[in-house]
Image (cartoon, rainbow, N blue to C red):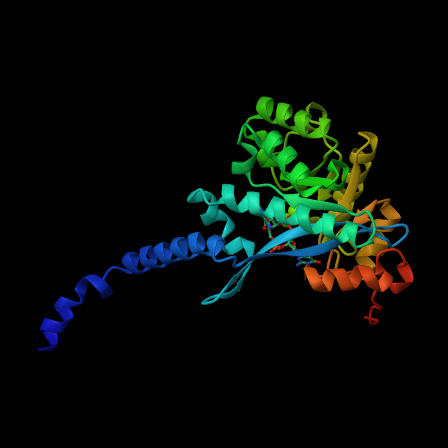
Amino acid sequence: HAKKVGRANHQFFAPAMNAAAGARLALERALRQALENQEFELHYQPKVDVASGAVVAMEALLRWRCPQRGMVPPSDFIGVSEEIGLIIPLGAWVLREACRQNRAWQLAGMAHLRMAVNLSAYQFRQKDLPEFVAAVLKETGMDASCLELEVTESVVMHNPAEAAQILDRLHAQGIHISVDDFGTGYSSLSYLKQFRLDTLKIDRSFVRDISSDADDAAIVRSVIALAHSLRLQVIAEGVETEEQLAYLRELGCDQYQGYLRSKPLPAAQFEALLRSGAADTPAAAPKIVAR
Ligand code: C2E
Ligand code: MG
Ligand code: MG
Ligand code: MG
């Protein structure tokens, strides 16, 4: 009898690949449903001016609140969303929601802060991206100068000639362009002069050991010098300690982002942070417990 059952269930138990394929299919199905079911939300992380401590901008970071899986980080679903083409409608939702929220905060009297939105390579390859962005700005009433788009080096280097054109058309609208995770992607620096860019974002991996690793400190110092000589702004990602911030200040970094000031927060909590005055009084920054 046992043998018979075993054979009958063979297709379900034997190949581990079936289980993996099944899980993947379930994930795809759940993701497609998630957009319709409004399970996505944006969290916001402040970008802080190093010199004054003022919040000068925010980055929208996508979260999936899945009823079965709990809160899912983008690393677990952006790749799949790209592979199944969902990233186009999902990315459109992100842009609309970020612009709507930013405009709502401005109408509610909160400071004129820039909103940064991450773009996937797939979105960047859509020929009508500049027109789409213009339409969303118009629809939401958001000022183009308040929008910042973050793209990685690999996104623009995929097709440099085309990318240069798209960046020009975005820049012409007054939109701010940042290179995300700078230093981790394509190694050629020639694109820095071909493309219209405004800010380099130094990747977290260079910031982590900046106060103990001389090589990381040298890289960060060089990137800041490079950015400034190209008339670009520079922001450090992943700043978690006062010590890291002190180094960045010393090296002349313009802005920082990281848990030291705040994790990405749901809209209501981010709004509370803005209202608390933390946006423009450095003294209101959270106190750091001595190490
Ligand atoms: P990213 O754009 O480089 O975003 C920074 C990531 O670092 C975020 O992770 C953020 O939560 C995290 N982070 C910020 N400060 C600190 C810190 O002090 N320490 C540490 N350890 N981490 C910090 P998250 O939210 O999980 O996002 C991961 C990546 O997913 C993003 O990297 C971005 O590439 C992508 N992503 C997020 N939202 C979107 C989106 O709406 N569209 C697209 N296409 N990609 C997105
Ligand atoms: Mg980013
Ligand atoms: Mg980044
Ligand atoms: Mg990153």
